[in-house]
Image (cartoon, rainbow, N blue to C red; front, side, top):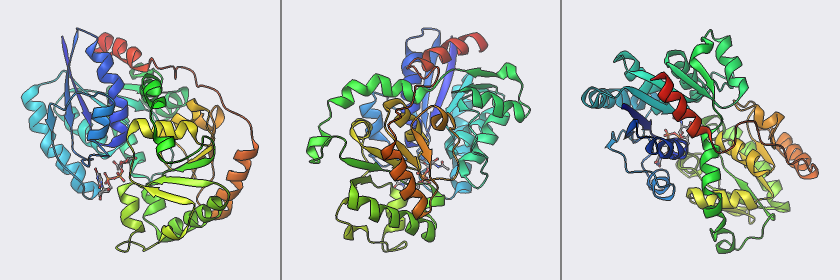
Length: 363
Ligand code: UD1
């Protein structure tokens, strides 16, 4: 029997561990311990994902909450160490690139516990992104690196990581999408919001680069102001973005734009439904670039780079940056292009099963 401590802390982590935990539960040789760091704690950012995705309640919640990067990372490390000492897992499994990911592997490695990173090898080559630092740190000290597409293998090789640690397994976020597509289809969010299929755009925005700098956020808002004249925009607002738009932040009042509908963050199923019925999605999220690729929905990524290049070469994604005119040009191009992209190899809903097989072999 191998005991694996799965560690998750932020919204996108929950989507990924949902499939991993299910696959581990099916395997009698694996005992799972779930640790929630508490990086995300609001119902809409955390508990609602546990409920909708049927994730078991965490065995332990470190309840670190929000704070600066140093504070959050340090608190996770301080609170996780005694948990690992007490429960003595054979391995620690982390997903993604959030502060919880990097903090957890730092603790585990120094306790001599084997570490597994799911979604390894992604690189934006932009070290101003906190996630890029988390990716580099996590991959450089993890024992088993599970990558979602071949570009991850190349990136890790370039950093001198031995091929023997690296396995291409596919994409666990897509496992969760495939498992929940039918349930999401039954969501009544489209009618509830009085929308018509393919007659709205869906928008998300939360990257510090885009929402913590007033000029960048203003450029994006100027593009939205134009787009909403043409197509209604639905915008579930992330807490970081809400704070910065508010009078306590930059005081940008979006309520003057009649066709831009600001709503609270949505649960997984409603969001998946809204994405599948949208005419186009505008985002700076990583996961949404992947999900729109599988759904065949055009996606404009409001960033200058992406750590998920396969969504550009094979999927429906376009990098449009954050300048007003570039976003508008990307919008026009995307709507006049009928390409629906193709499914990247191994993004087939079976990544977690492949991961479990590898874990049983290497642990
Ligand atoms: C974090 C991740 C990012 C991921 C994103 C998904 C890092 C470095 N960043 O960014 O990679 O894409 O999660 O959402 O780990 N807040 C709440 N409720 C919550 C959580 C946060 O209101 O449950 C508010 C707090 O005011 C907090 C702010 O949102 O200060 C930002 O949260 P934080 O976890 O620091 O970063 P995210 O922007 O969510």
